Length: 331
Image (tube, rainbow, N blue to C red; front, side):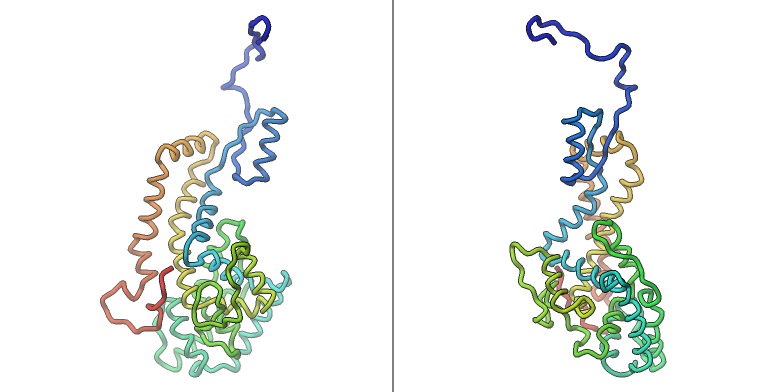
């Protein structure tokens, strides 16, 4: 438009049709680094680029934010078990600790008795984790101890937990399923610690208070854990982060997060094009988010399967032997 004369002149080429013109569409995370680069391309260089947010990243980001905001130190719990799950790759990525774990397994099978402490104290926790009855005969206790050599984490390195890789923590949870308490026994066998001893970090409990880092407004959970690792060493610290309380919290995270991952899987399967992502974003902003939250609550907190898994001693009227698990506090 000519500001002096007020006449308008068409600037588009003859035959231009916006519906047939290719436009580069970017669907990315809302992170500051990539968004700054995209804004530069659009507003500085004038590229025909449409920038939109993808709906996938927020699944994991929302889950992490919820864990950090919860009162039960849930994100600390994720960091704790991530250390345990990654122990095979230490120290410093050398993987020599996996060989150390294999050697410890051999030594335990040769020297430890399945009929004496400390193994007897671990039996209720190992069996509860595996969902099997506690052994009642000497032969059954022997077979339970011998299962150390068959653990996934003894036979192979396993996957790596990287918190930037969405599903890696849950992938490791599946790999270590039924092995957490046996791993603690294996790594602490011969030490002064009992089955319920642990580092006073994830939650206040009967523990080694020397392994405590006070919370501070300027100290992140990762920084606190790094201080503990520097002071005590990762190999010594990892099994002590496994306690009845932290183990229950870990199970709660895994079970309740399934609803979040179901929603994430649905989006990954069904939102494939820019148009579909745009329609989904619009529908959520117009009230669809309420249905999503409701479904997450129904699938997570109000699922019969979930409640029975988290509260096995309250899920039946039949009397069951107590192993101390029913006293675990809800976060």
